[in-house]
Image (cartoon, rainbow, N blue to C red):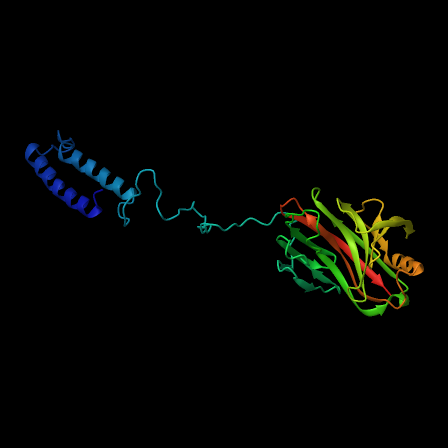
Length: 310
């Protein structure tokens, strides 16, 4: 593309030639008349050159740098009149807002025994206690009433318990006989496929005695044999026992939410002599015993939890 400077030089040269041509080829016109041939050839050349020069300027030939190649755009972004330029998005970044209802967590851990003390007085515990057989698991939470775990379990024996992610409350070895109240409420959800159950797990005398309350069972069977069917707090339970310090109250239906009178179960065991009033309460937990998620990551969610004791 010809630069404006060169175009001006060409214009001047042609004007000179054109003017000489007009002077030698035409007679001086009479007053009030037009001289024949005054618009050719010099005037026509002048008009053409001026038109070309103006057109070149309007195309922006004075701007530095080469013109974009066909099929490509210039490297500098352009904006509409009155519209400010906006920076281009960075590769891999997104300005989109998170989807509505997406959970956000104050804490997460993939450590097998990852633990977090919550502001509402509980511990969140990843508890991959069967570490030799357990698959990956991540626990995330905001409080004892708002947390979840993503777990991938299966392995060679899909019926063995691998993990027990839970919310727990520790007690300073208080004697069972001195409690007048111990009730809990919960709301949880589990995947549809796999082998696991939601359950309370109460430990006494350290880890010497274990009492469980199963409330939502998907494919599991408690250890021991069935000893009785009893009613506690208006709910019917089947009691299993091993005879070696393990008891499990299994609800006769699955309930993903509800309230449980834990002290009523402990008092029943006191009445049968299975426990003594001097047995020391060490810990109360609620979570999921996970055996298998069919070897794919599944989410277990707690949306409400409370434990009241005195």
